[in-house]
Image (cartoon, rainbow, N blue to C red; front, top):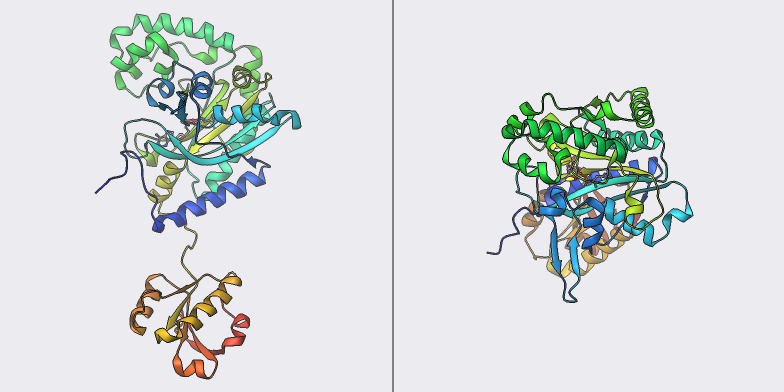
Length: 417
Ligand code: HAM
């Protein structure tokens, strides 16, 4: 038997209803906030991500599915959307049409990580990006959008962690100070962090290793290095959220794993997830658009992991699913009546009533069993004697009640859905 690739999952028909429910929430809440959907290709030229996310990050260094295509072009399956979205925004001159560009997306992403609960090699993200505004209200808007999404989907209890990485200059200054400190405690750092010391020391800050955490206790804090402008921006974001009853937790160790961030960074965490406790995150990326060849444009956004959201909802026992079952099952007492059944089914489907017929020429009893198995709301019984009188029987599967109805009048039958 050929197995699916490690770290990938089939989404089977019995769980598709939950996906459809959550995708509905994405669509509705995005519209409430005035965001438009953008769909881009699943793969991009590798440089979109290596230039966009940063060569020193784990994503670019270790996790990308990169290959040469037959034309010898280096191609990468998208590990995230922000860089790809920016590529598309520039290519399609979308920023020239509007000062504030609000976009959302949903789809599969790929990272070669060690699979575990909540960590896959093909996973799904929803994200929203607000391009064009340097103001703190934009940061607050994307966090409020995320908050509405989670609530609408049924997740009410989660933490919003927030930090500011300040300007490029602040980060440079801070990095020097942090390096000095880290070098003084380097013998206590984990192997991974020792490596990071060389190429991405900021990332050591949000290491989950207990020794690292201990060694970082007296590390300098980036918030102490912010200039007045960044400080004011950060405070305004927090005040705006608090005015909407969201109490973010300031965490000066939060740096996130992508290089494009400046100023605000944030993450959504749930204690129900275990070690992969972050189910969404984002921040400001004022330099990315210019870095990928566009006009300098401030921007902020976030993405959430759909599998992780579904895990939380499962833990909460509040997984809602759209009903994907058919409404009507047509039971035919004799195969010679199949053409009549098929015709009735087509009439109902044209009326947007989802209808199944039996395709196995089963017995009456077996067809009734099948109608039960697929949770049909009504069974339409097409019987020989009835068909001669031009009628059919309609059985309400909730109440057990059965009513006769002229075939020609089926369309006007008062189905109670
Ligand atoms: P990220 O933190 O790398 O940010 O990913 C966002 C979310 O995607 C994570 O919080 C997590 O829920 C989910 N996720 C990431 N990797 C995996 C995985 N291997 N398996 C399952 N779920 C995963 C970004 O991708 C940024 N583009 C977010 C952003 C948008 N920043 C600004 N705009």
